[in-house]
Amino acid sequence: MESYYYSGWPLAQFNSAPNSDQLSPFSVPTTTQQTLPLVATSTSDRAAAASLQFGEFPSWPAPIAAEDRAASASKSHSQAEKRRRDRINAQLATLRKLIPMSDKMDKATLLGSVVDHVKDLKRKAMDVSKAITVPTETDEVTIDYHQAQDESYTKKVNILKENIIIKASVCCDDRPELFPELIQVLKGLRLTAVKADIASVGGRIKSILVLCSKDSEENNSVCLSTLKQSLKSAVNKIASLSVATNCPTRSKRQRFFLPSHYVQ
Image 1 (cartoon, rainbow, N blue to C red):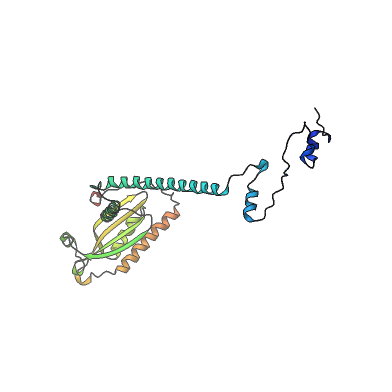
Image 2: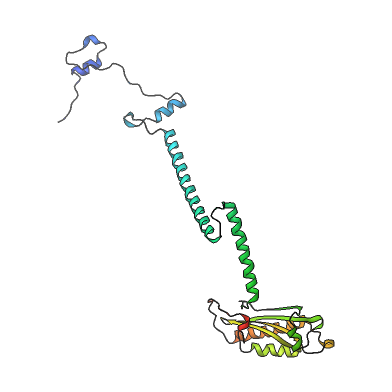
């Protein structure tokens, strides 16, 4: 059905009538007040006008949305803080299992006990590493000397003046030519090995030799720098032989070794 507008209808006459005396019995009463467009004259008026949408329904107030965002952020922060505290408490519970009689310790005391326990374990590990010969991944030669405490050394050979013995450590690739080279160096310096700790693992070998002089006291002075230089030359020769023969790369597997008193 098509709709038409005719100015002769009573409603149109009523709306166009200047006063209420011209009302028709068929007219519908309406308000004579016309709606004027909103004109924002201040900041508050402009904000109120901007809050109105189509159909004059107000939009979501901005302060309420900001409060919701702040509440959501606060809730998220609280949840993250709770998870962090739970992780810390779980770690502390694990530490309490490692430290004896720590059930009633507070957190500070527990952490102090853990630090002391770790230091004690580190000291024990260092003591064990000094007593056991383990090859390293780098070629090295170290020379040391100290007072002889074992009288069995003096019964075998003549030691240096004031009971000074030499301790030489050699670490390099495990090659058949190593021991002939070491024997040649010791013979050239007129030294003899009183004790030897040898460990060979994964293609590497470490030899710790306790050396003494073969000569009498008046002729038994040995230059430590000469000994170190001679041993370095032997190690370099072994390294050059390893490169020349194109030895395959060693696999880095777990190292197992025996104490020095098991070495025959």
